[in-house]
Amino acid sequence: MLPVLRVSGLNKSFVMHAQGGLALRVLEDVALSVAPGECLALVGPSGAGKSTLLRSLYGNYRPQTGSIRIRHREAWVELANAEPRTTLDVRRHTLGFVSQFLRVIPRVATVDVVAEPMLRLGATPEQARDRAQFLLSLLGIPERLWQLPPATFSGGEQQRVNIARSLIADYPVLLLDEPTASLDVANRDGVIDLIRQRREAGAAIVGIFHDTAVRDALATRLHNVALPGAQA
Amino acid sequence: MSDTPLLSVRALTKRFGGRVACHDVSFDLWPGEVLGIVGESGSGKTTLLNCLAGRLEPDAGSVSYETASMGTVDVHRLSEARRRLLARTEWGFVNQDARDGLRMGVSAGANIGERLMAIGARHYGEIRGSASEWLGRVEIDLDRLDDRPTTFSGGMRQRLQIARNLVSNPRLVFMDEPTGGLDVSVQARILDLLRGLVDRFHLSAVLVTHDLGVARLLTHRLMVMQGGAVIEQGLTDQVLDDPQHAYTQMLVASILPV
Ligand SMILES: Nc1ncnc2c1ncn2[C@@H]1O[C@H](COP(=O)(O)OP(=O)(O)OP(=O)(O)O)[C@@H](O)[C@H]1O
Ligand SMILES: Nc1ncnc2c1ncn2[C@@H]1O[C@H](COP(=O)(O)OP(=O)(O)OP(=O)(O)O)[C@@H](O)[C@H]1O
Ligand SMILES: [Mg+2]
Ligand SMILES: [Mg+2]
Image (cartoon, rainbow over all chains, first blue to last red; front, side, top):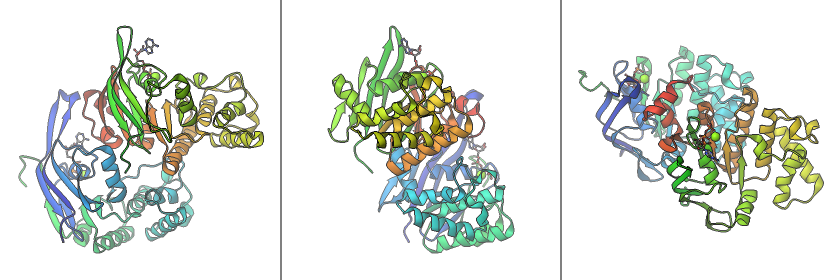
């Protein structure tokens, strides 16, 4: 399979003006590529830059130099320094991101929080709600919670709502930042199954999995991440 | 993706006497996009918004707008009559001070109905019906329909102003601190309403706010202004999560997590 995500020469520093312009170099000359059906696990110690790399791939952090190319609408699109509307279009159709924390939208019911990305892709409200309910039950969110906004949910419940929201659209490329961090074993296994199904259906995945059991279950390849200058 | 921006702004500059209120601002707003403008008090946000909507004449630069049916127009070269027509039929403008955006001498219902009549509505019952519906959407009690905004609280006036502007289904709304002065639960309701309009009807908007939480929820892109200039812009999550400019870093660092 040919890659659908190709990264090369990626450099990212944080310049902190409150610290007199201190520059923290985090990514130096990073290169990787991922093909459909692959799950690339980013490994490295805390603070090594795994989340920084993943967020750069999503267009959330802005690398100084380098190239992030992704297959989108049957063409290659450059995401580094892309126009905002290009990044938004890629995110809407091609690139999903599962973060560790749900950003709660005030007053919106859980089922609608989950359904939203599918609605934006043009699904009917019925289709989107059906799929949202299917995912919520698969992830073990009790039905009595579906109509409530997730603001008051437990950490693990919010994380599962977040996973449902991030997986409701069948993105061909998925980025996962510790998707099982606050889950108990039963719920963790449900999430693993869901992600594995995506991988087997041909999604290209880049993920950070602290839990080695999760990593073993999902990863097809490892990619070491180390701060510039540190021994990998 | 559309290939024509809704609004195209080039090198816009506005001075008041010797003071530059807005300096060399350029950007494109695409259909369905919500652009947020943040920045400290006096940084030129309201001035910029007024120049965009043709309410203030800039000293230099241009604003072109892709109309629904008349092609592209240069906002500052339109006759006053045509600009007003555009403002009534295709735009909304939510003022920072609700008193500037409402007719204080007529009832709440008339404030909303007036916008509908401006686009040709004539049926009294239907106009009153829409006015009631919108009052409900912004959570003002229906029994206040015949009261004047002078008898409303600041937050109620702001909500009435929002209803007045959205009732006519505008394509583009300019909003200057639309949720300033609202208590959090009403603010959440208004945000929900605006998000719905953006998602379902591809409403485009330029939104000035000092509230980065509002910006995060509602805007796709963000421009940061300081001293009349745009010092940083990008996707909203980029600007908030990876701010580059010293001022933006200070702004993001000085708030609770959003
Ligand atoms: N937005 C930011 N602004 C400034 N510095 C940042 C920012 N994001 C990350 N960093 C810094 O970059 C370095 C790498 O952080 P990152 O979050 O990528 O590490 P990580 O490998 O994901 O660690 P962990 O395993 O603990 O999650 C850290 O020193 C961090 O403080
Ligand atoms: N009509 C005017 N005449 C003279 N100076 C003006 C006028 N309107 C604005 N200014 C000045 O232009 C600058 C920008 O003002 P503006 O109202 O655009 O700021 P702002 O960013 O909207 O601030 P705030 O957040 O306080 O509303 C300020 O220095 C202000 O004093
Ligand atoms: Mg991390
Ligand atoms: Mg102002």
